[in-house]
Length: 263
Image 1 (tube, rainbow, N blue to C red):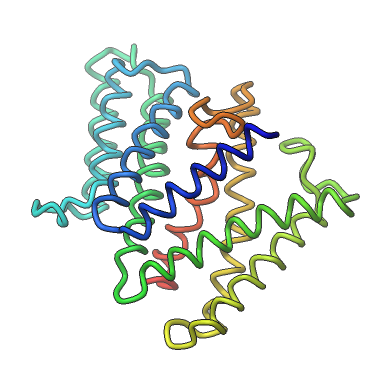
Image 2: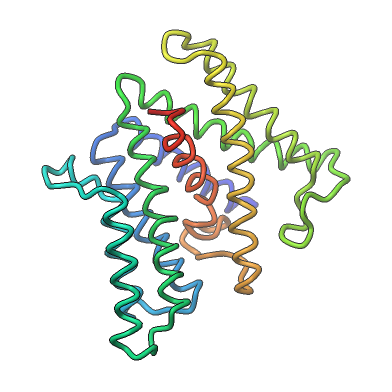
């Protein structure tokens, strides 16, 4: 537990500092996390870095995640990137005479979209003018409040299992506690900065961040259970890997941006 707390505090402070600095400091951090996260993803699925499908997955993920326009380079539309990656991984299955299997091609396409869009949309939210830092902090605050609420309320009064086949320690009471704490954090944020966000919009962010965030956590738990592993990696002592820590983020941020709630 001590190791988990120390890692969490130091990692959180470093992340917060780079988020405040913004620009390429924050983007660079997210891109490093994306690279590590995708590497964990391919290892989780039994692939090696040098496999053709893995290399194409990395290229596709970076094509999605890197803010090419901010670097002064052309930015391909997302649908172009996704279709091109789909075509490339399917072509590999043909040229290797199915030594690179079709299910592997599907996994790499899925992983590139999952990891690439997740971290890309974190950059998008931070870049919203003039309050991108505030919206970033509010969204992360809601996600982390949901995690804390679910944990402590579940420990205190949790009696009914939420989804024992996937995550046996999660409870319905904990999940509801997470939603309530996330909503409270977002409403307080709106009251503290009324010029930047309405209470109604903040409420929506809190609800989505908590519900979708908890679902993102369950998705990762289900996937690890399917693969028979406890953690996606070991980068963060006491916390597992990047995908273990970012599973909620990768769902919440794209959902908020693609629906136009944060734009």
